[in-house]
Length: 194
Image (cartoon, rainbow, N blue to C red; front, top):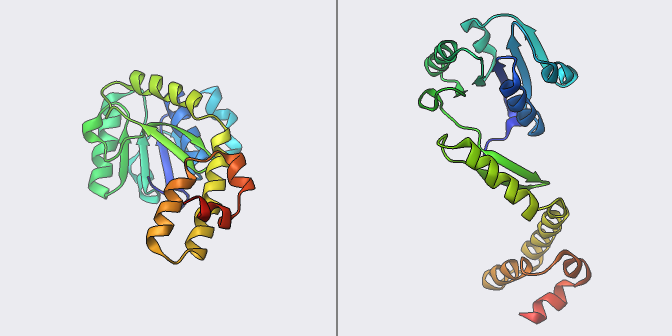
């Protein structure tokens, strides 16, 4: 997990895979630039949310970015980008060659502060996508509020309960309660249960 809000990210390529990567990076607060001589319509629709550089790849473009995704439709070009990133110490995901990548982007779902990632280490992206779909139905949008509620409880328990063992028991116990119960119970009542 990386806080992408601190990164200037460059995606090289203008097709559907570049679009998917851009959408993911934007969702996590990254500053995104897409470099390509041509852009698919999906990428053009995101133009207000990120920068589009209509140009062919040159190693000079890497200098201003900390994280790079090589997503062109040319394996040799992607390999060249991966090697240049390694030489410059850049984080790089080469979508066509895991061996040249310094990181992989897992399939994932986000429900507020709940983030669940699935990876097969590049062995079967289709399986990762299948598992992601199953998790999406298991962990629906209601988990966003539930996690926020648990976060509030955690802050209260850490502030109010000085005994470390009791604090640990309460933190384990609250995850067994549903959101409605968490909203209606007091700390005093909760402590009495344990």
